[in-house]
View 1 (cartoon, rainbow, N blue to C red):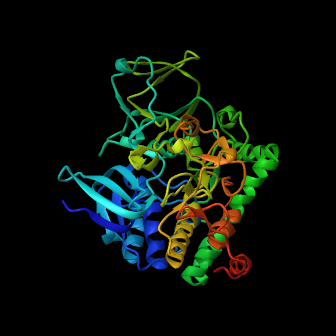
View 2: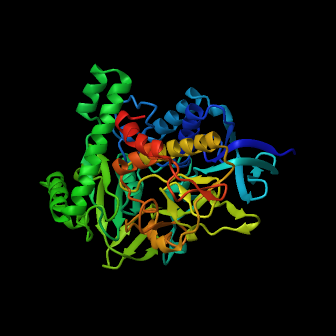
View 3: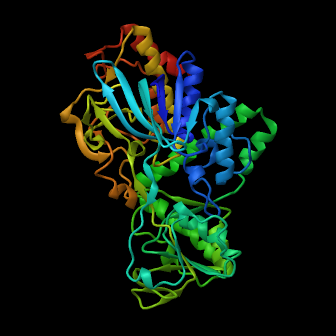
Length: 506
C-alpha cells in the first residue's frame, strides 16, 4: 500500500483529538490533517466506558470546547451526551471525514534527514499495516491504557462464585436486578456506580480502603440555566464558563492556602447530608488535605440519597480475602455479594502505547521535560496534549491546541522545517507533568510520565489563568525553542505586541 502523507497527524479522536482538529481547521485551514483512531467511534474515554451512570466529573461549561457551546442545562453530563457532543462537533467543523477509524498506531519514527515522521499503523479490519508520513505529530490519546485497567489481584478470587467486573470492561446487558453488589474503590467511578445501581440491585456496598472528599453539586445550576434562557447561546456559554473557572480556581487556591478551613467546610456539608442517619462520618473523612487528590462531586447528592434510603452502604476497611459468596474484611466482617466490581483505577500509558523513536533510536518519554505543558524536550515537530488535574481537562487541551496552531503558523511564516526543545539538564526534576496529586494512578505512573522543570517554561503550573497568556499570547520565539537547530529570539515588535494582544484577547 502506498505511503499516505499529511501535514499533521493526530493520534486519537476523543475530546483532545477532535478539539485539536477543529482548532487546526479554523486557524491553519491550508494544512492537511488526519486523525488516527483505534476505536470505531469518536469520544475516546466516553466511547470506551459504558458502566451505569457514567458521567463527567467536571462541569460541562468548562469541560466543553471553548468554541462550541454546551447548551444543555445539566452541569454534569452522561457519557452518551458527551460522546454525541464530540461527534456533533467533529461533523459541524468538518473534521469527521478526516478520522480513520480502526487504526492502531504501532510506531512513530522521526527522520532528521527528511524532517518527517513515519508512522506504522495497523488497520484492524484488514489486519494490514499502513504507512503514514507527516511533518507534525500531535498526541491526543490521553494518558491511560484502553486495553487494561489497574486491577490488583485479591487473595481467594478463584473461590468467589459470582461475577468479578472491572468498570473499564463492563459486560453489555449485565443484569444486576436483585443482586448484592460490592463496589471496591473510592474514586469518581465508584461514587457514580453506587447510586446508579442502587435502585435495581438488592443492595450496593461501596468498599474503600480510605475515604475521598465528596461534594454535592446541583444537577442543574439555576444561574447557568437563567443565563441560557435570557442571553444568546455563545454569550451565555462564555459567562457560565468564566464563572465556573473562577469558582474552580478559588476552591483550589483556598484548599492550598487554608486546607483546614476547606476541610471543615466540606465535612460540614457531608454531615448535613447524613443528618438523622446512623452513617458514620469516618467513611467521608480523608487523612489528606483537600486537593492532595482530586475532589469527587455528586449531582444533587445522589450518593447520599442512596445511602439514606438504605439501598446502599459504606464500608471502610481492608480486604482479607474473597470467599465463595463475598469478601472477608480485615476487621472480620463479611460483605455478601453476587457481583464484585473492581473500580480500582487506571493503568497509565502515553501515546497510546506507540513506540516512539528518532532516527531509529527509541525515545524514553519519561526522560523528557515538558515545555509549556505541550512540547517534549528532545522530540522534534511533535506535541502531546495533557489536560488539567485540578480543573477540567478540556480547558488545557484547548489552550494546547491553540498554541500548536500558532507554532505551525509561525513555522510557515518564517520558512522553518523543524522545531525542537533542546536538552537542558539543569531544569530537570522528579515531578511529573501531572503535578503534585497523590492519587494512586499518578504514583504508579511516575516512571512513565514526562517530567516538569524547575522554572518556566518547563514548569507545569496547572493554572488556567496563568496558561492563557503563556500559550495564547506570548511570542512563539522565546530564547529556548529551536528552529532548524537554532534558537530564535522574539523581535522587539513581537515582545511589545504580546501584552496588547492579551489585552485585546486576540
